[in-house]
Amino acid sequence: DSGVTQTPKHLITATGQRVTLRCSPRSGDLSVYWYQQSLDQGLQFLIQYYNGEERAKGNILERFSAQQFPDLHSELNLSSLELGDSALYFCASSKSGQGETQYFGPGTRLLVL
Amino acid sequence: DQQVKQNSPSLSVQEGRISILNCDYTNSMFDYFLWYKKYPAEGPTFLISISSIKDKNEDGRFTVFLNKSAKHLSLHIVPSQPGDSAVYFCAALFGNEKLTFGTGTRLTIIP
Image (cartoon, rainbow over the protein chains, first blue to last red):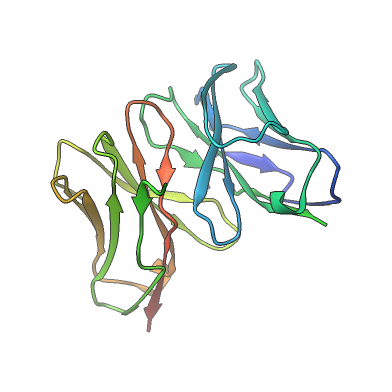
């Protein structure tokens, strides 16, 4: 158990819909990262937050957005969903976000039908 | 452009023998490398890391070797155990905190 929690574990929805994925970092960690793992793909970095502020952006679509709240939990919002958005979405956390090891949550499996 | 490559999608090793997983990278600015292990339906679990100022780091049965001139790193597991069967991801960092992952190698340990 990494100490990072993600909800929900599974999500099935239809194209065009909007979903919100939630992540709670390890106790004491200020930085949260979101990754996407599509079928046959490696993990792709989406976005990073540190203490409520966006710090780095990766291959995140404009239809996706995220935020980190004062209690440090983070939400990833996916809108106008397409079939190709079906993937595993992982959240990770680290203490300060300064090149340290990141600890991953169990992921949310999203299926868009 | 795949900056971190794991060219072997799968590897099978006899229990008790050495497993060697390989990873190549193209960006010479990477200064920190990590290996993660992933079981089905679980998030990646951190295994071992190495800074670019070192060429070897050992932790129990796991050793990571870094050859900066060849832009190559490898993970050695010895002796291999059935519980080591998983997908292994190599990842790299430079300056900022964005991890760049390889596509993974599925390791199967044969009893």
